[in-house]
Length: 117
Length: 111
Image 1 (tube, rainbow over the protein chains, first blue to last red):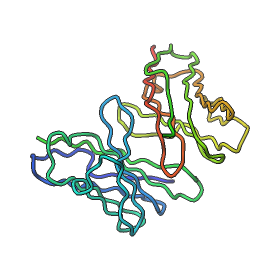
Image 2 (image 1 turned 180 degrees about the vertical axis):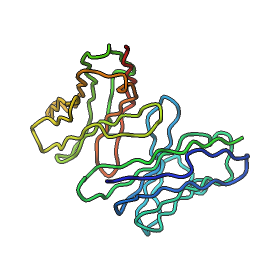
Image 3 (image 1 turned 90 degrees about the vertical axis):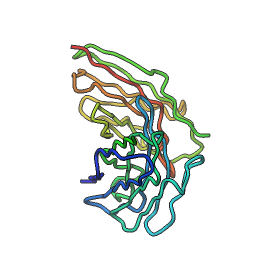
Image 4 (image 1 turned 135 degrees about the vertical axis):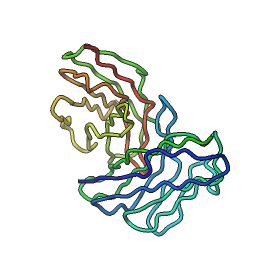
């Protein structure tokens, strides 16, 4: 149980285009979803926290107009990177919380590798 | 800021031996959870073990066990009978409104 999927797993796009990444909790209702960014050999950096039906809370230094997060249902959150540039190339990971039997725990998607040319 | 510290950026161990990864944390809460996550080359985050702070008994999961010292705010991970598949980045994390991660320890198991 507590499976989180993420799509796509790898995306290459041209500079200036927008990219949408989907995160789904497959077998539980995720009241809260989290989006992280990870550079090679570094830890996970929290970008934003979203609760279903509410606006996302962004971490300091994260541009909310560039990284649009929507959490429209208890099983789906999306991250849209708008007008992507090469410096946005990174590994993006989503996670979901709210599984009632596993308080405090987050369940992670497999990640999305974004390459902006 | 409430932090999680992993003081060993890299470690290596021979197959079948035992290795301990260190983690210390800071918190002002009394009830919280602690986790060790493993991130292999696939980069999928995998939960290794979790510990509820209100439980005195150290958590164990097969070859993985923790030494939880609440007063010292220490939460180390012991891997027994290391296997090649244990090679990965290991992250210690503390719960709150969010997970706070340490910087990670890259563990290499050598044949």
